[in-house]
Length: 102
Image (cartoon, rainbow, N blue to C red):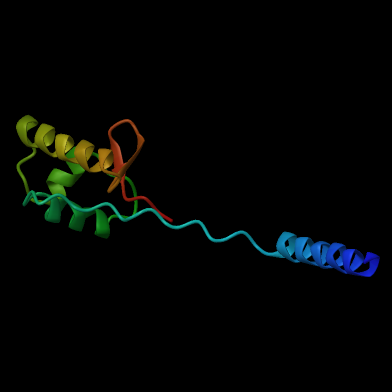
């Protein structure tokens, strides 16, 4: 039955060629990070939605109408670091924070 073998080999070649021509399946996107429940996160994120460049903690305090005092700046900086650790914000430079852009 040599003819059947040749046909099976040819079908195998066609199948292989077809499989090699198929595009790779798309990589699934990672789930979007969730915003913490802390009440200060909403106003902070509102500041970053309106911003067109990276911000420092002091600028975030000013935008939120908080007194520019060391305690407020440090508290906001800690929140910004936590948001960056969760992937909600990124820190492109030391002390600068922004939203990740696709």
